[in-house]
Amino acid sequence: MRVRAAERHWVLTFETTDWHLRNPDISTNHYLILSIAMSNLSNVLATGGTGEYTTGWTGSGASTSDKKIGVVGLTMFDLRRLGKIGKLGMVGVNGGKFPAIRRHLQENIENVYRDMDTSFEEYPKEGNIDPEAYKDAIDKMTPGDAIIVFTPDSTHHPISLYAMERGIHVLVTKPATKLLSHHNELIAAARKHNVVCFVEHHKRFDPVYSDAKTRAQALGEFNFFNAWMSQPKSQLETFRAWAGKDSDISYYLSSHHIDICCWILQDKAVPTRVVASAATGIATGEPYNCVPQTEDTITLLVDWQSIKSPGHKGTAVYTASWTAPLKAGIHSAQHWYYMGSKGDINVDQAHRGYDITVDETGKTWYNPFYSSMPAREVNAGVAKPSDYDGHGYPTITNTVLTTAILNAGRISLDEKRAVGIKKSGDEWILE
Image (tube, rainbow, N blue to C red):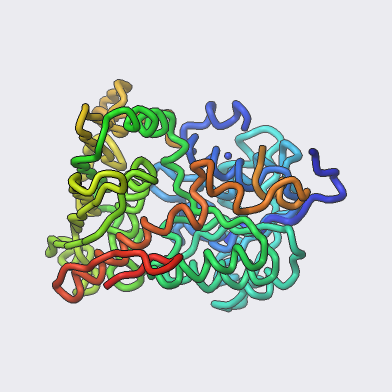
């Protein structure tokens, strides 16, 4: 069933065509999940509308990472070019940033790609500072519209909840929330208000990860999982405003592979215990000078219990760092190993057999993949939000154990103890 143009809705932001294949600056996986979640809606609001992931703007100019022109905004502009969405809005805190952001988008997107209109409605208006501008923007929307939440981790819960309580569909970046209790609240809100709430776990849409997930099902009982993900220490310049204060490197990076592990083990095993350890000293020193509680590298050791075989227990180790060496030829090191009772899997998504060497910069390994629709179908009345829980999508319900592990890891670091995870009735809780 198609939605008529007159039935399309607003999308407010805070990826399918061959266009992204010609653009090395955007993840295919980001593009896919954003397209799946938002296609054929007329109104989209990006509530993380001024940051690196949305616009590629960092406040001092274009980002020096692989997101120089952003991900969210770029994708929405392209979907609008294709007639998939209509009105776009962006929400930040400081309206004074918007003139520079508009120039950045025009120079690097509109003037480079054909038929790419980068106009958008801004909140708050130029010259105003308002940490709750998202409320004014959401209040102007109608049920069935959608928001994309790419904001600091601690704000995901209040923004997403405010939107869902008003009948607005939500795509929230990972981690969905910092606290398991908040994640459970979002699950309940999505059900109560009959809206779609997806978490932007784009790794599920990576063709290698998806294939590995399928093949892991034939490898017997789970035994061991080891994941490593890092970014160069230069990222601390970008993240200094919130690093160690609002969130940590485990929430920021390990959320990728913890979710992949939870996805692979869905209906096969459950996490029962988390112990965390951290390395420190680089982020808090010169020249980064992050707050004293900022960790460099965080490792979570997680026990898993088989659902079908009481005698089978597994172990997972998830490590993330934002103090990796500079000029390593990659922006994000990302690899993992899975072992089952009948075989194993090795995945290296940083080195894909594709590298280029330039005299001035040396060797670089490139990732060309870094880069039916739920909200539309619910709006049309042909599906219920809960229908997507059974299809492997990263819904708010399907991603609760990712948040449980991350939250348990933070508690383990702060309280220097092991943290248990168990199900109580219909909810997962920590103990």
